[in-house]
Length: 386
Image (cartoon, rainbow, N blue to C red; front, side):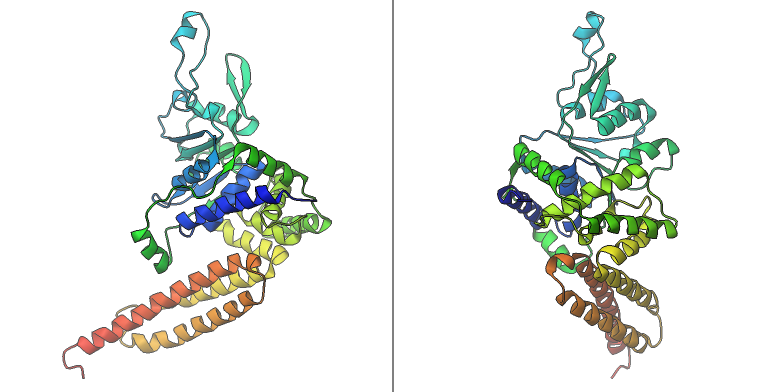
């Protein structure tokens, strides 16, 4: 298959421009773009202030002529907030119509904050828009232009009535606060910049067409089946509808990497589509990595080993804390060296997840090194210290 190199270059430029402005959000940015490429929806879980809405808003700003709708839901939200107020002039003529200008009904990209605060009053109409891209009014179904809905929440829904809404978010990611000191330093001095790269809605439609046409190889298909079996053995299940959608996720991932067809390597994106609760992420991560990218599996295992070491750290009041930290720091250094060597032996595009693990290991090592330094400082400042 021959790709439209110009369209791909534009999409990648938007991705890179967003990554330059949103620190430590590379994965979330790529997933958001994939969601648009296949017309699926994405859920961002995480505490307030982690740039969830900023990411979606910034992405929409880079799509010319795209209409954006954003709203914060509460338990008391009404349909008027999503679909617009009733038209009084229509009521005078015994017609039930809403004024939908500036609402979700006319948006290409939607963002609902605290999405699981949705109540029964708006849930049915919301599901219709998300599922079928249809808005029902006065007994008629109107097609809406929605490409993707993005939702954000601090927690998963406890109400079973919201299970259908939760299931419609094909892509899911946990967005955490900045972890790296270098990122924090950049954040403290960072100034927002105007979009340096944009695409048009026509560009996006052309990209969607290319993704749909990308061949799904036997290698990719068998990898998806292997992942399904692996997850079933771990007690993690997904619906047939979700498994069907994985083929488009794999195609979109391959297209973004400039591939002319899919492969098992592209299945690594499924880590973000096959868990229901954050507790399942590690299991899904391992199963997918075992099939799609063995370096990712090794990275997950080494990251877990580093976490175990970090959790074994002595308490600050330990009488010989420096000596107790020394073997832990040495083992963390060995783990870091091993993973770094493995990363250097593979293509850059296959090492992204492993680099995330490497950063986490560095964070553990830095925290324990600072703990050791503080202990030494206290020893030198103590009365009678030499």
